[in-house]
Image (cartoon, rainbow, N blue to C red; front, side, top):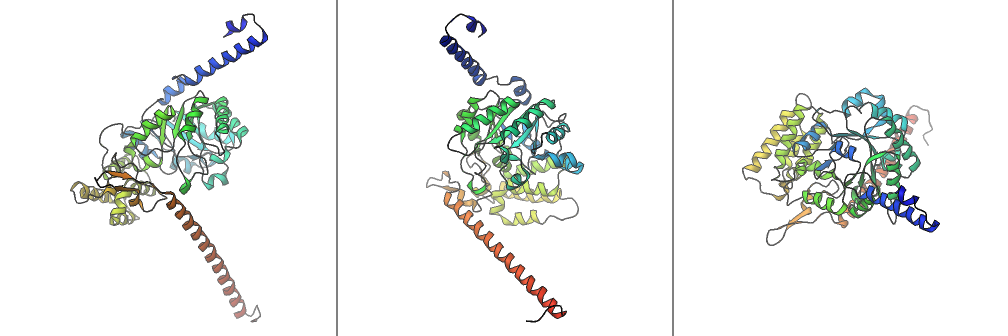
Length: 441
């Protein structure tokens, strides 16, 4: 490039050649398969295996090790609140656990103070392969805490945070973002480029906006992810819209990314990480998870939550097992109780006593069964006249119905609250009247 520019030529020719050199550099940087080679090599990118997403109270050590058993290689920790992590030793002990075999691993932090984020990340940088900044959480608590997707509009602050973290830490800094709302994705592309320039080594993109949340989740925009990936020179991981193993291959092909991340789907089916072979029964997955919990202890609340997701179809079809899981003794060991319940369920399936479709949703043809915003899960699937399984999904009418139900429930709660306040005021007045401290009229 230097030799080309050193050749005598007119100003117009020089400007044209300058643009050509810039284009060649841009193309080689963006389109090279060896993007950010050192970091990619450390994290195992590019990879066709599914990546385990950061999930609060879900992607803890036993669950990560279960996913690794089924073929996952790269995992994220649950989201860690940087300020609380820095201040509370109890929080650190409960929320961040790992093991030598739990690698490669990325620890995710949330927050808006660069100094606090750096100090918190330094406490784990020798135990992880990278540190991730959460810029994708769309929940209301993220708005109150000023972190997650609600920081996406504060570009200068984000540049400062990423820059300070990348300069202060001995491990790479990565970011997880969502698409910015608007008629096009130019704003998101500019944001991604500025994060790259600030020092971001890997960018995970959730193909939805922060408004696409809960019952309004909608489809992930893989085309937007593809365009963003082509505009930057660092490895990109796609997130959103993954339900089956076929979805992983399709996402890699359509977006050209270096990795695919899953959250909701892999919560129900950790065996989604398997690239080939027959997926195990849901109850067998649950037993494998309990084996991991025995090796890497976890609290009962999180364990039970995982069991509900692994066995979501079976527990809907056989409510008695749900009741048995819920009635675990408060004192004493809970693992033997859970193991007995799951073993009984597995025996019922293997003996042929139960042949319901809803109990087999981990199998490849069924895809994802669990949808926390669709309570009538049996409506997600049906069979045609030939017996072929048809995935219906959650219709928009159902989502609108859920919205109306939630609005109605919220209104009723407000009315009950007002009613309670009025009753309390009347009771207080009657008390004052009885004590002679208020007139009876």
